[in-house]
Every structure is written in C-alpha cells, then in structure tokens.
Length: 92
Image 1 (cartoon, rainbow, N blue to C red):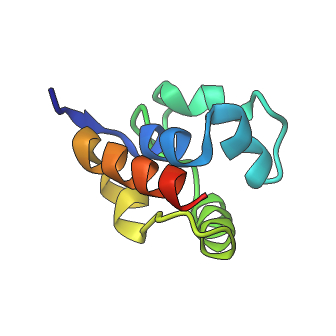
Image 2: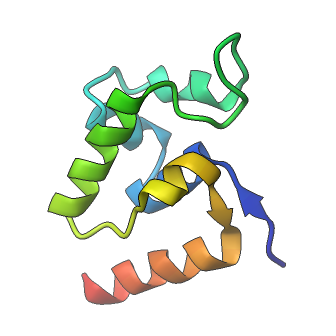
C-alpha cells in the first residue's frame, strides 16, 4: 500500500532517521522531532527553513542520496521513496 509522505518523512527515510537528518542540518539530534508537529510558521512535516533545505540538498549530493528540491517542498509517494531507498541499499 502506498501513501504520501511529508518532506520530513522523505528525509527520514532517505537519511536513515530523524536524528541523522537533524545532525546533517548542524542541529542537535532531537531537533527534527519538532518538525513533525505544526508551528505558527509551517505545517506538520514541513522543514523549517530554506537554510535547512540547502544543507540537506548539499549533503545528499555529496553522499549519493537521491533527494530532490521537490521532495523538500511537496514530499513524495511512499512507494517511490521505498524504491529510492532500495536503490541506495543495492548501490552500497
């Protein structure tokens, strides 16, 4: 069964967990847990800033993680992200 993932969900799957995502962004390992909930400035599952998005894209490019700007803005279908995770596993 397939369902839609938020941008934070996509990053968690591609990077190996919310704590890894937080650390890639230069934050403490627990910082990303707050992104799962809404705030006054963003919806639940949205990333908090362009700075965070740029850090994630740069890290992904340097480490062959198939993250796209579209993933960071719109999220993605879970089946597609599962395919990308499997491709990363096979390539490793």
